[in-house]
Structures are given as C-alpha cells and as structure tokens.
Length: 160
Length: 234
Image (cartoon, rainbow over the protein chains, first blue to last red):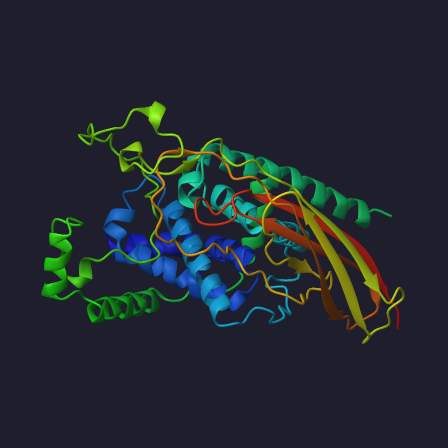
C-alpha cells in the first residue's frame, strides 16, 4: 500500500473522527491530540489496517481507548472540576445535536460514536467496549430513544 | 438510523480543525518507538517470562503492540482451532473457584437499575453574577453512583465528565458463572455552584451513569437524568 493512499484516506476521515472525539471529550484541544495520535497509529500499521474491512472503524476504536486513558489520566491529575467554557464546534453547526449527544451518559455516547461515526456493527461495538452484544444493542436502542426525545424537546422549545 | 447518522455527521462539516500534516503523524510514530525502546525488556526478564509459561518468544521493542490499540480488530477473525484444555463439568461450575470452569461471568447478566434524580436550585430568581446553587439528589436501588455530567445550559459546566471509573483488577480466583450480588440501595445529595454571566433562560441538566465494572466493582449499570429551567435576570 502506498503512503499516498494513507494521506488521501486520512484527509477524508479526519473531520469525522475529530468531531466524534470532541463529542466524547467535550474539549477541542485534547480531541485534536487524540485524533492525531489515533491516525498516527493507523499510519504505523497501515499495511495491516488498510486491508481491514473497516479501517476507519479500527481507528475509532483506537481513539475511544485513548479517550478513556486520557480521562483516567485527567482524573489522576486532579483536573476534574476545571470548567469547560466553550462549545467546540462552529456556530453554524448543529449545536442541538452536540448538546443532546453530550447529555448522554459516557457509555451510550461511546456506543453512538462507534456505531454511527465509526460504522461498526453492533457486535463490533460490543467487542470494542468489552460488553455483551445484547448490552451494546440495548445501550444503542436507549441512546436512540433518548436522542429522539431530547431533539424533539429542542424543536418544541424553538417552536413559538 | 440514517437520519441520526446524517445529523451526527453535520458536526464534522465545517471541520472543527484542519488535519495535521502526515509528517506530524510520522513524528508521533517515532516518539512512540523511542518510548518503546526505552522500556524494552531485558534478557533476564525474557527468561523469567518464558519460565513462567506466559509467552513463547519476545521480539524487539519495536514490535510491541500500541498500548491503546483496540482489544479486537474490526476484521472478522478466522475460526479458532479446537481447544485441548480440560473443561470442568458445567453442573459443578456455579460460583466456582475452579479455573477449568472458564472465564468469570455474572449469570444472569446484570440488569439496568435506573437512577432517580431530583434537582432544585436557589435563589429562586437569580441575577447575573449571583451564585446559583443546585441541590441534586440521586437515589438508586443498587450500587455506587459516579459523579454527574453537568450541562448548565449556557455552554459552561461546573464539573467535567470524569469517564469510566472502575477499581483496578486485583487477585480474583472466581471462574465460570456466578450469581449476582444483592443490590445495595443508595441515596446521596450533592450541591453544585454556578454563576451565569448573562441574563436569559437556561436548562441545567444533571446526568448520572453507572457502568457495570464486571467482576471488580459496581455490578449493576444504570442511568438517570433531570433538568431544571433557570431564569437569570439582569
């Protein structure tokens, strides 16, 4: 596989993975760092990753693991409690969608990112998260219900 | 499902930030390699590991797996060959310490136990710059509840999401299927302070989630959320 292939794939995938990681962390700077690290790992193993049925999915799982590790590190460093003062998306983005997903619990948010951004099947989401397939399916179903309620509430609030 | 995916993907357009150059990714790669070389195992350690029966061979540091690589590849794994390990009689494997009963698991799988959340705040008519104190009570029929994810409704948060917290794995000699432990009821009240910087009506939301930590921690997963509207005056 040519490195040029990686470059093209990387540039196409970067915006989505970065957006997904921002959804997980709620912060732009750490999300940029985690996203770059995940793509760097994909580059390192590109011969292998490029032949997978879903190279992007592999990279999302790497990023999710990095996020979890980052969260634990942040906890250890006692940075919990630091205010998150900005919405990390452009003003024209669907901030209602961002807020709705951010209000989901971490487990559901992770499952949503892996399923809908990463394109993993429910079985792959379950494996990546270390839970039973039934648990992953139920988590995703609950997340979909909660998102539809939250987004519907937003629309009602916006309707005069 | 398609709508949800489309809605989520709108968050990537316009991009949050430009991608770094591929050369930057290669620099990260070199940095990781240097770290791996620094922690490369010594020949004595290799001998000890082989004697312990843990591995057949150990390659150089550069061949180590990345620490954060996924536990499983996204490709379909080839079928495994039949195991030659002795398997215990399943009828004697309930709540067992016999390693031949296979990996530990809860049986049945822990059900979700919802978390009931109540929120109140004071003062009742806060002004800009005044501290608003939210009193949040959570009740649950099982287990420990982790800290909240808080959305104050104005883009800020008095507390960051802290992610999954499970105790570190310790020595555990349980194998096969185990009965679930009896749930322990839980109730806790916490206060969160926040100052709104501009007048308006905000929806503050407090969300709690407890993951199942498998064998090492809280067993029963659960979720609960509550929202309250705060009108801040000039």
